Length: 323
Image (cartoon, one colour):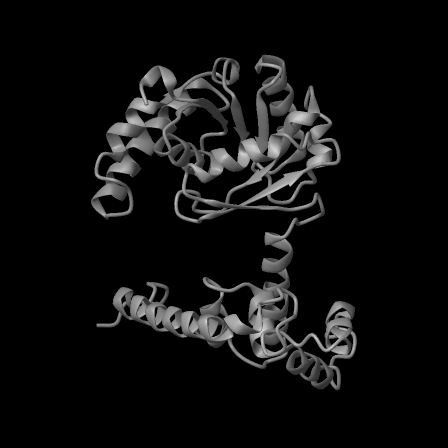
């Protein structure tokens, strides 16, 4: 692909998140224009992204030529110059609706009418943000996670007025960065933060109740169910454990916490229908019974590989170094 054939994207908001998104897009083969509150901030962040890329390459995290590629493909501009002529624009300014509205109005005024506009918001309803976008059918949430260059999941959140034709285009743009998308409805917290904060809330409850320390809770999470999560989501894990087992556990938890751990109606419905997960060939994910041995073999191989990786990396540098 020659320089003239490269797609042109823009990222408005060139800080930590926006900069990481710009790096990912540039390494995927696009020319990326970054913008910020003023051109000097954008230029400073461009220099930082180039230097970061060199360090990431030295650490084996980016391709060896990443710094040169990013220097060639990322350009600092004003907002209006950055979005003019860009086919995809990602807004990544601070998480305040008044700042996002003002920025999205500027983007809408300067962008081509058919340019797709995404927002990296993690908490604000996309429908609320769409109020500031001209031609809101081209607007949706495109939520990367921190650190953007290294976390592979991206939430795509259309609002009620998003043109369905926009979604596969954005999915292809994100896929070119090596990341994986999931379509999510426009609901407060979307999926990522609803789950993340539910876990955090229960963890704080355990600390406040004196059940365990933050350190011990972190150990349990990362060495048990958290250990499974890189490979399986909560529904796959439940299917493998057995949905009847989950129902029994809910009943046990309800002896102390009847409302906090009320059995989900959908779980009751599946168990009542005899859909108990992989052991019955049907559950949340309906894994065919004949694939169960293959699934179990994959699971065991994955867990052993994860343990080897953790042993190779060593403990995270959270606590003071030991002499």
